[in-house]
Structure formats: C-alpha cells, structure tokens
Amino acid sequence: MIEYVSVILPYVTTILLISSIYAVFALGLNLEWGFTGLINFGHAAFFAIGAYTTVMLNISGCPLVLSVAAGVVLAGLFGLLLGIPTLRLREDYLAIVTIGFSEVVRYILLNEEWLTRGPFGIHGFERPLQDVIPYQYYNTFLLILFVAILGIVYLSIEKLVRSPCGRVMKSIREDETVPSALGKNVFSYKLQSLAIGSAIAGLAGAMLAFYLQYIDPGTFKPIETFHAWIIVVLGGTASNRGTIVGALILWTFFSATKFINPYLPFTSHQMGAFRMIMIGLLLMLLMMYKPEGIFGKKEELALSD
Amino acid sequence: MERKRNSHYLIDPDPVTLMDILSVRNLRKHFGGVKAVDGCSLTIRAGTVVGLIGPNGAGKTTVFNLISGFEKGSGEIIFKGRRTDNLPPFKVAQCGMVRTFQIPRALTKMTVLENLMLAPKAQAGERIWNVWLRRKDVKEQERQIKEKSRHILRFFEIAHLEDEYAGALSGGQKKLLEMARAMMIDPSLMMLDEPFAGVNPTLSQKISEYIDELRGGGMTFLIIEHDIPAITRISDRITVMNEGKILTEGAPDEVKQNREVLNVYLGGEG
Image (cartoon, rainbow over all chains, first blue to last red; front, side):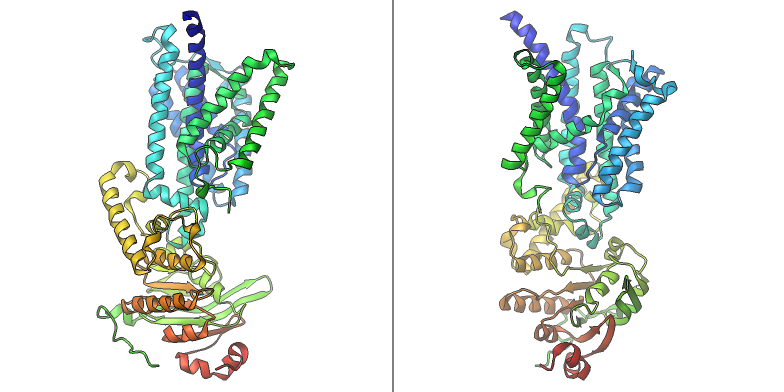
C-alpha cells in the first residue's frame, strides 16, 4: 500500500505541476481571446520570451526574483510592441501575424547561439529556494509555489474582468463599434489586454523553466499555443475557472494515455499522433454537444452570432 | 397641432443652448464612383430636434457616419465650437455626441444593466491600475453608475429586464436599450438612426414622448426617419436630402408642402 502511494503521489504531483503551468499560460490567452476577442495564435512566443529571459538573466548572475520579473515585463512589452501595428488590423490578420511572430521568436532562439545557446538549450540555472528545500521534497514545494501563483493570477484576472475595464473588454469582444460610439478607446484596451495576456504567458514560461530545469527552442513550438487554445475552448471560453479545469483535463489525458500505450498496438511515436487525434475528436464532440465548453456560458459564447 | 415651443424646458435654457451646437460645411464622401454625400451643409441649433429625411440612398446614414467619425470624408464639422472631422469616433463621442445605429447594436451577450453601465465616460475603474489601486473609488462609482442606469431603465420602462441578456430582447426593446445606453453618457447631441422603424404604434408614441421630454431637458437631436408623420410631429426643423445633397430645409409644415420634396420623396401624399 505504502509502495503504491509512493509511486502514485509523485505521478499526481507531476500532473498537477504541469497543469498549473499550463493553466497560468492559458489564463493569459483567455484574457485576450475569451474576454477581449483577440485571436492570438502566437501565445507560445511569450511563453518562450518569459522562460528565456528568466534563465538567461539568472545564469549571468541576476537574482532569481528579478530575472522572473524581467521575463514577465519583457513578455508584456513584446505583446505591446506586437500589438501596436497589428491590433488595428482585422482579427483574422492578427491571427496570421501572431503565428508568424511566434515562429520568428523560435527561430531567433534557435539560431542566435551566442545569446541563447541555440539548439543545445540552457540548463544549470537556479530554481526557487533550491538550496533550502531538501531534494526529495522539492517537487512538493514547487507544486505549492505554482498553485499559489496560479491562485494569484486567477484572482487578479477575475477582479479585472469584473471591473469596468473588463466590461469594456467584453464589449470589444462582441462589437467594437459600440464602445467606440460610446467614447471608449478600443485600440488602447486591446493593447492592454494583449500586453497583460503576454506578461502572464511570460510568467508561465518562467514556471516551465523551473519545472523542466532545461529549456531549448523546441520547447516552444506552435503546438504549445494550441495547447492553450484547447484548454480554453475545453474549459469554456471566458471562464477562468474553466481554463484551470481544462488544463487539468488536458494534462491528465496526456499522462493517462502514456499508461495505456503498452496495451495498444502503437509505437510511442504513433501514440503521440493518436493522442492528438483523440483530442481532435474530443473537441469535435464538444463543439457539437457543448460548444460553450465545460464552464462557459451559452449566452456569452464568443463564436456564435 | 401646434406644439408649445420652449414652454416645457425643465431648466432655463442657458446661453449655450441658444447657439449652433453642430455645423457641417461642404461635407463630401465618395465610394468609388458613387457620390454618397456631395457637398452637404447643415446647422443645428442647440435644444432643437432636427429630422433628416430623404429617399433610400440619399446619403443620410453616411452623413451620420461622417459626423460621428466612423467614416472620413472631406469638409468641416464643428461641434460645440470644436473641429471634430479629424477625430477618431471615440474622441468624437467624448465631445458629447452619441449616435445609435439603423440596426440596433445591443451588446447581446451582456445583460441590459451591463449595456448601460458600460457607457458613462471617464470611469475610474476603466483604468486598469485603478482596479487595484483605487478600489474604493471604483466601488463607489460603480454604485452610482448602477443607480443611474436603473433610473434611466425606469424612464424607458425596461427596468424589469435589467438582468436579461440583451440578446433576449425584442427588436423594439433593443431600440429603447440603445437609446437608454446613449443617455448614460449625458450627451449634448443625440443622433438617432431610424428610431421608429419596425416599432409598433404604441412604442413609437412612447419614443416620441421620450424624445420630447429629453428635448425639454435641453438635449439636441438629429434624427433620420422615414416615418413622416412621426418625424414631423417631433421635429422643430426638417432637412431633406436627395442624391447626397441637401434638397431643402425648413419647418415641418413648409417642407411637407415643398414641390420638390413631394416629387422625389413623399410622392404627392402631402
């Protein structure tokens, strides 16, 4: 029995750790898409900027807390910079530009070896309180830390979307002509939403680096952006609670399918593809029977009209 | 039926209300080869109701779009003494001009109350940092805005719908909602695009009464409308447009007798 717990517990911890990272990551996207209606297909870029800034600053001697702060700020700043030329475009163009941006970022990380060590990736950076917490308890500590961060991010976004500022964002999501006609600077709100969403992705990037202890450009492929999208759509667009549950479901599913792999006639490579097929099927069923997602409100479904 | 002019002002009209609130000079807008608005000039005195009529395609809605900044053309627009033709729509609105749309743009996925609470300008809580830094002010202001919203919803007799999603409202109720929402920013000029279209006679009557009452409070109106009996009933002046130009302008009774207007628009029914 005790043996059983000692196997299960670290496994559950791992799922919760990765889920909490992706929950934070997807909460950023939910602010942009769920509450403001911005189609950002380059969310992974800000994940990468946050992670790389944090670890690169840290290995060159910057204190960890400052490194994380810099990662968050820089990710937000890049969101702002990307938003200035693109947020005046129609939303489908925004989608195209952002996906291009995320690939540009990844290729820079891959090719500027003098700065980022390119494909070799970076390891050997500090983790929070790593000298204080005994190694066997470290993941438990990290989980507590990540859940606390997730809680703070969740509460902050909830507060924001329920404020007058969030009300303007929701009105932009629905029909930006209306807030314009009422004297709201729509562009400025979109910019703020993108910057904050990106900064949150940057924070998630730092969390991911602490969890993996190693990052390389391959960690931040476009699929990460779509993981965030799956999480948001699954949990319910414009529901922060749903986003957290969505992250938990997705990563539980990913891990569970690893367990059943031995019982299926697939190689591990084929299994990866099979998992994505299953996810695709799941999303299709969701769109057919519960398009608003698990916690989404039908009346607020952002896709319908 | 002669209305008693000026007798129903709730407050004494201040000097500003006697001025021209809006003056438009030589407005032009072309879409490809189509001259939608072709040298249009008009002046609106503060505290009056001006009807803008004309056949379909006369350019009325384009004039609205130009005045409210949603489209850019050439010409001069002066609102309350300030050039507004180069301003983006949100800045024009901030000057105190608000418009509604031909097809009502209720925010259907927000509640009726939220629709109204969105509107007031310069809300402290619209600034992102204030959400955390000035919690008390934001909360107090939200309370006031909610109170004002409910007051206006009662005025338009849709207070019982405050928690409904605006998408659940009927077409006529959406029109009232749009007017109520516009009221929330305390505009000096309200531009209504076909407020009576597709509205049943009792509601139409009610809308006229609201406009009359608001005008009595000193508000100025520019109204596009095809419902001639309704628009002549509530307007002080009527401007007739045809093919992008102003055909004529005058008191409702004069305009109704105008031969050119009869020809191009009213079809001899006057």
